[in-house]
Amino acid sequence: MNAALTALLLTAPAAAPLAVAAGYILTGRVPHEAPHVVPAAAQEKTRRSQVVKKSAAVSSSGSGQGAASVTGDRGDAPDASAPGEPVVAPRARGRHRADWAGLASPALILACGALLASDVGDSGFVAAYSGLLRADALTVWMLLVVGTVALIACASAPAYLAGERVAGRAKDRTVWRYHALVHAFLSAMCLAVVTANLGVLWVAIEATTIVTAFLVGHRRTRTSVEAAWKYVVICSAGIALAFLGTVLIYYAARQAGITEAWALDWPTLLAHADRLDPAVTRLGITLIVLGYGAKAGLIPLHAWLPDAHSQAPAPVSALMSGVLLSVAFAAILRYRVIADAALGAHFTRVLLAGIALLTLALAASLLLAQRDYKRMLAYSSMEHMSLIALAAAVGSPLALSAGLLHIAGHGLAKATAFCAAGQILHLQGTSKIGRVRGLLAQSPWLGALFGLAVVALLGFPPFSLFASELGIARAGFAAGTGLGWATATALLLVLIAFAALATRTARMLLGPGEPTGENPSALWPLAAGLAACAALGIAAGPLGDLLSQASAVLERP
Image 1 (tube, helix red, strand yellow):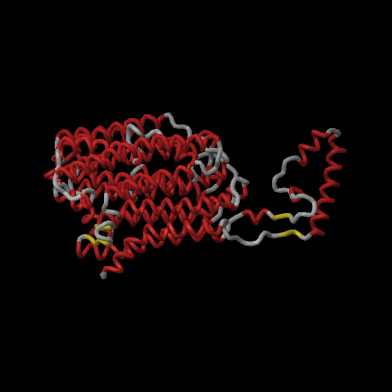
Image 2: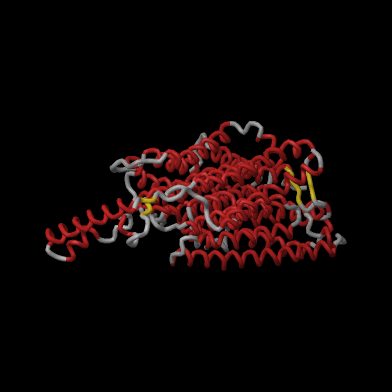
């Protein structure tokens, strides 16, 4: 592959979503079909008929209150327009064709990842712009995960936004702002994945905080704005810790004789890790794990996650839980290799295993008391990130392969679950578990897809989370006495989380209910996500070699 094509493939995953976002901003509004205008004669006829109905209601009820009960506050009534203005039919507020334009970015990210995979498999890595952008097998794996999860989320967005429009919670300006922010979010995540410079990595992850803060507060309700501020404050504290840790690693690199231009270059740091000052490196790595761990939903800076995930639009929650947490943890994985080369394996093993067990214990206990199904899914994300952290602590080839497979499986299953939760919210009008009953009877396909997504998160075959959790458990027990006990404790906590998730999901799905209409176009992205998760669990196929190469990138020197 020539240098120009390599540079294009490394640039496009971050540049293309940014271009799409700029397109939405420059248009100023989402293009859509012209509203269906009711002729003036029909308007006048409608108004006269409603006046007759209102008079009849007043005479039959005998009071103004009775009339209000018949005609009051109908937001879809044609007489909502002022006299002389065109009446817009309800279908004009539904789905817009431009909502589907957002699929271009995920498709391009997937295409770039697929094209880079073959070149990375031959040469080990490719680079451009003097090493600023670099792709190895881990980069390609993360690009494929980001693209696939984003494809599910962006394909689910038109149905979600249509429901928001019909409910009166979204206008054209709100929708184009949503699309612009989502694609800027994708751009920042892809930049964090493809850059080899740890300073640019920090900037990209900080950019995700800025962009997603506006997405969390998208509805502008009191609860969503509060969640957005909580997200900004906690993640900013985490990013500040990560910044301080990055500065310390830079200082250690300069003291080791690495030139200024290459002091934050990941391959250079890895090659000279044995020359880094141990005390400075130990403090820097601790701060980085705590800082990026905040974005990954790990203790102690985890408190933003349930609020942000429950208040953000469902497709945004799918992206945040499905890939943002994993992108932040991929940064930790990069630093972990440097730390192991500089300090030995024991330091990061104890640090990551301790954080994993504490986060898992907290998530399991909070799942037992959870009454909101979106927050339930958020705490489930903490559980799964804990398992990935445990795999990183073990650090064997089997554990790393299982951890990377878990990243992909969790992203697919969690994106499906959150997008289904958004449709359930539109259908039921509540996110309270106790108020949702008989979902399978009311909406069989939606209920089945949501139930299967939870089954996948519980680690049942044939979904890939079964294989990845089994691999993490095998690797943990094979690693030694200390990690064996940690793995046994983690499995016990996973069983508690399993019981909580299964019980609450069963309450939502089972019971009597009246059938309601379902929209097939809103369900196919969910079915595709589950199919991909199951296919990955049955046979990795050509992805198996890529997974082995990605785990080799992260193996201890």
